[in-house]
Length: 126
Image (cartoon, rainbow, N blue to C red):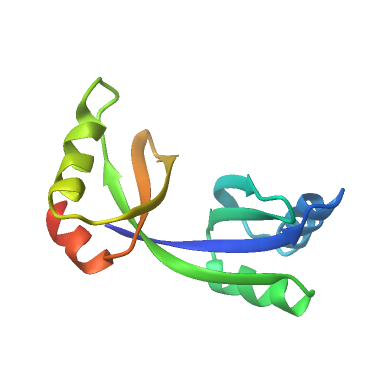
């Protein structure tokens, strides 16, 4: 399954995450999944919302650098080795994984994977 992700890049200064979340909250956009990573100079807020396109417009209109991209979503069982089976397929086909994080909704757990080859990754998880 393909999931669209919103990424927001913010300077590493106090209050920026709050500003992003306030804009979304004030406009009734629900955040379903959130992951924050940082570098020395900026943070990256990766999120799934109930309206990524509206969120993207609101944030860029308010001066934030943001974009969207598609991720592979793989449902896994909460047991040892289940994710390993999926990642072995990627490794065998030499599909690069840029990052991974998890997403739970409606009692299901999915692993979200950013890859360099979305189309081939989709075929692997069918």
